[in-house]
Length: 391
Image 1 (spheres, one colour):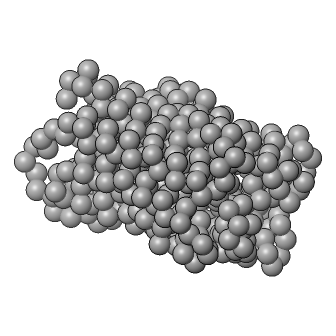
Image 2: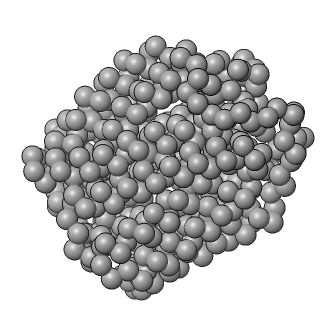
């Protein structure tokens, strides 16, 4: 694909991601409050629903990645995924009891069938020298859309209520789905290789080790909902909770692209290690320094953690996976991470309810330390090395 067409593709995906995340984050700042306050669910249920959502994300990405490689089609999974997000938000608006949230949560997170095929296209049209930058741009636009969504949420929530807000949130994702359907031109698959199926035998030792350490980290990386509820329990007013969500999202938006560029310059592992250390800082702040100012700073660190983590993870996976299994590798990675998210948030909820409010943070610190040690054993593909022929 020509460079100009490649840039058009990446920018179109970035704009669609902006719109989708704007709709998502009109909901997410008040999602924990809606589930626990409006619908009356306990914290363990909130953890279960959030974890279930991430597990569905993982399965949907693995399935779409495998099918995308097998049938040599990407685009259909992408626009359908955005459509699922729009429909689920209409369902949230109509839900009267928390058990009824589950099917719509499944539909919402099944919309992530878009991610592995989209990320595979981005990796295909990017060079090794700017791949992390491309993923950083995508995540930056994701978070920028989230910032706009949060501001809309703060502006409208007290005027139109939860349910009307959820209905309004369906519109941007529907526009994003239409844009992908109309604008993206899917090229013909390169080469004549027959897809023989995906298994762990297709992955080298470094990919498997990175998968293991990322899974361990994910087991301790519980949902952001716990940070927001912690802040509310600590004494922040309910109206200020979306502002805390806005703070970490702004920092994630501002720093995703710079961290992507930094990873292209100094290496993926160094930036990923930074992201883990940012998360360590978050945990320590919530355990030890429970003042209003320090908790706000904890949300700043959480935003920096997300900004450094997400682009680099995708870049490493795209580089470590063989090219012909790129979407499958991305999908399999997200499947493992998402399946770990279900017990992570559920166990965090149980520890919160049954042991102590800080217990989930102690568990996460231990798992993060193990992940950092294992990361040292991963041999990354250098940004200056052409990885398109890895097998």
